[in-house]
Length: 337
Image 1: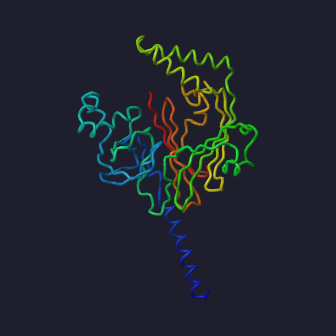
Image 2: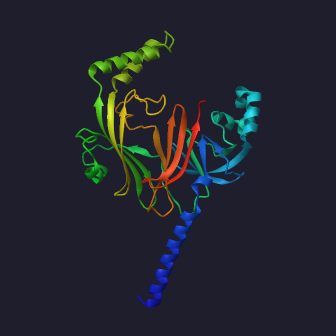
Image 3: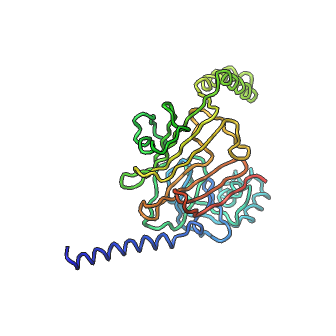
């Protein structure tokens, strides 16, 4: 390679690196992130949204997509009008619901303003984020984080973390859950959960089923109960109840382990206020905190994770560097007073 060509090549590399660094430095999650419930956004002091602005929508259980702001209103105005008219009148009037219905979504702690985005989300748990002005070069993990059925034996992801896994969560019959969030170039962010469970005793299992039967019988008419009882009993008989579980949770980018943490869970023990799990071999890894999306501002060198932590008393939203080194955004929405 000639000196001139080499010099030009070095100049291009330096320019690309400079643009990437500039992109990261200029973009602010804090000024461009809005918490979301269904198709409603909360706008808090220090930021704003205008009609027709485009935002990236991240929702639990859905693929990221681009939405558009179709309505903005001051929250006190929406709240007062909603209270004066009443829920039924607003709900039954399509135009009123589009105008002030978001006051119902944020009926706990109210933000400064409310916005509605289109298109409306698909049928899913509606918590998430809207992010404006993401750089054109940002990498966004796609997909819903679907679980992939894999056992512990010959699992390629388990092999990658085996040297990091402790005996606290790994035994020959450990439970495995793999969730994949595809990204470009054939890569994926993978959430790997490895769980060592302690199942309930046969006696406790019997008592659990009897208690559940008594509970649901109270809400069914006597004529409907015999048929439904059979169905519910079959469902519960198939369940493996779990007393406690020790989880090793990993996030991987291809073969690179980006984050690792240990989680202890027990049936009936609050993980947040009035949020106590009833664990079984299906929901053992469903912690209150869920990763719903991933963004890289430097072409996959670092990844930012979008987290929603839902509990009875409120919802915590945060965006931070997946390795834990930087917190970009954090807000708690209290839904009970």
